[in-house]
Amino acid sequence: MNPNLLIKIADIINNNGSKYRAVIPCSKHDYMIQEGNKLLKSCCYVLRIMVSGKTKNHIKRSVWNIYEYDMDRIILKVSRRDKDFAERINSCELTPHDVENIVRRASFGSLRLKIADSSFYLYVGEKE
Image 1 (cartoon, one colour):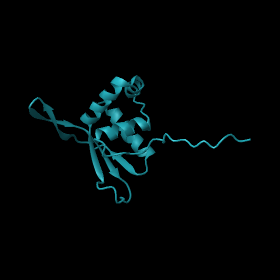
Image 2 (cartoon, helix red, strand yellow):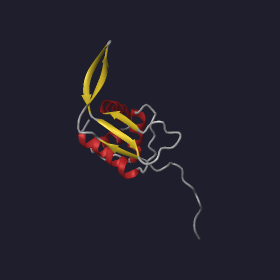
Image 3 (tube, one colour):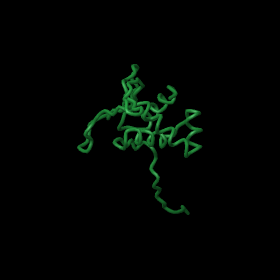
Image 4 (cartoon, helix red, strand yellow):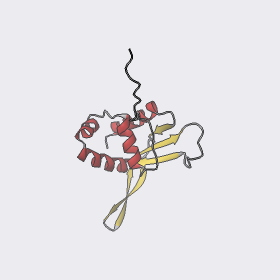
């Protein structure tokens, strides 16, 4: 993964969300990759997402580690289907909705950031 892309994801989380803070530690963390019947040890960067402020009753964790390899896997899957997403990844111009989907899928559904604008619109009518 492009390091600038990882930094951009952390910036989008920090700028658009008030509930979560994202940090990228300087050192790499161990990660196990399965190849056939073997587990291979490798190192990768981690996006660490923390809850800022008081935690509510429904939140059981306060820190999530999302590994670079998991995000790469999700980015490859989504970019095969969505060419606009692939262009945004190549130019490092992600939207908050893209970041929200990447983090949700890379954390296996356990973390939903809710930083993107909602898709529900209220129609009030035209002003006269």
